[in-house]
Amino acid sequence: MAAEEVNKLPPLPPYPQMIMSAIEALNEKNGSNKTSISKYIESKYGNLPAGHTTLLSHHLNRMKETGELVFWKNNYMKNDPNAPPRRGRGRPPKPKVPMSPGTVLAPARPRGRPPKDPNAPPKPVKPKVATGTGKPRGRPRKMARPSGGISGTTTTTATVKGTGRGRGRPPKVKPSSNEVSVEQ
Image: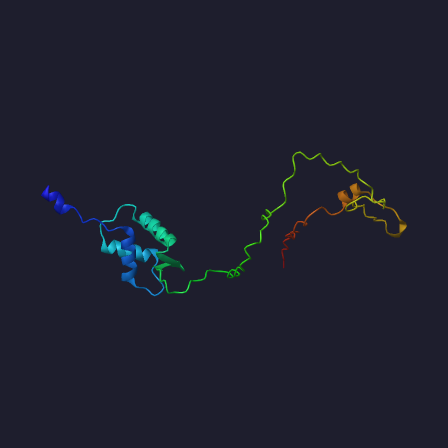
């Protein structure tokens, strides 16, 4: 039994106490980040549990929520009650004007489109009315190109496709290699 008591390491203090002592010992101007706090705790207390990083994160978050620590620009620092509150990103909120005690606020209207009433009768379908111009809607169809010039003869789309250029870029023309031999 005496050997077991000698080999047993002293118990660790609670994590919040270790965190506060690390921040005090590091004494950085803008606070200490999580890695520097963790390294200090590891160097001072060698026998840490296996889930040290998870426990440290949990206690830092809890201390931040309770107000013991202030989290600013990825650093943790002790809460100073005399310090002015730090402002986050973006525009500060407008000051709220106090209302007289007799005023009653109307319930806030929800955002978005109101839901359809399931008991409402269906709306009658409106018949489609012609625009009156006589032209069909949309882009007009492509017509065949006249190729006769002044004479007025036209060709159909089938002949234009068969004899004209095809779609896309034409293939590159390779020069024929005719070797010329010179005899004297």
